[in-house]
Image 1: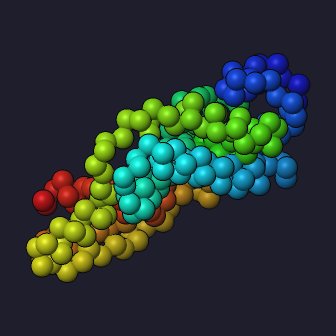
Image 2 (image 1 turned 45 degrees about the horizontal axis):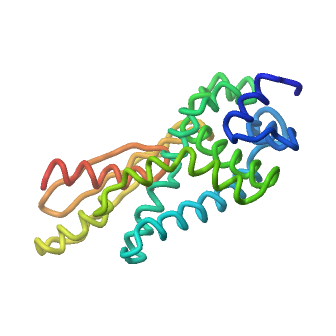
Length: 222
């Protein structure tokens, strides 16, 4: 792949010229296109992302306990956020996809975009160093971190606390449906509290669906 436009895009993203161009090509290669795909880079980038965000949260919220820091971390490194950032920076324009994946809509899939976002982080880490990867991450996650409220409660925690305070049974989460192609699975989850009500939500992961369902339950019943 000799694509000056792609390399210019990468250079603008990371603020440095690629040394090993092959890493970035692999980072945008879906499994439907070839065996040398982004999955291993995604694995690595996910860990670099987690370390970078955790360190930033530790420094930015010095008085918060581990539980609240974990809540913030889980939100910031979620597939949903990674997918949103991937879409923002134009990942979909540079994905290498097989015909079936293209036909299935993989180019706009939040999961695929999120996975590639993490694989790009892995590529930057290997091509340059940890500091370059951190700069890359904070360039696109920094506003999300700084914009966080000082007080934050995860919807699932807030719902559980409300149920306990009202002497209700704990919320029950149930997977209702799993549908869609492999690269873009959608999970529908139901949350219910006995003698209060129930709500359903659909998302690209069970965790996100549960979180959304808890948020909707709070909005509807509390």
